[in-house]
Amino acid sequence: MIGMKLKELEEYIKKIDKVKPIRFLETYMKQIGDDFNEIPNEQLKIAEYFNKDLNELIERYAKKRIHKSIIINQMYNFIINFSRISAIESKAVSLGVDNKLYKTEMSFLFKGKK
Image (cartoon, rainbow, N blue to C red; front, top):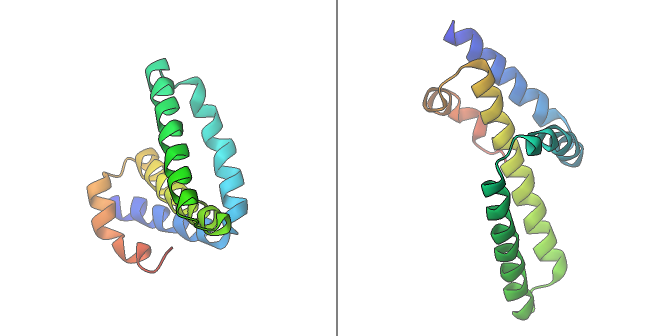
């Protein structure tokens, strides 16, 4: 049974890896947009602090004269990777696969994926 779930998870990972990153991000952002209806107000308040922290971080690197293109590229790469991992974890949860199990069993799929 778990083998079938891991196989389904593997197929899901292969499917999202075939999609261009920007297209995946666009689709995933629409998908998680629905989650905002269920997020408690406390979490949304924390998001305001997170946004402030991000702005301060970007300003700090801008003051170091890091080219905006580098900042944007790094942020883009981070959000693509973070979204990919989040999507995989969500799929694993929907399949009822314990994250400790799939991370151990599926670690080979994450190697070289950046």
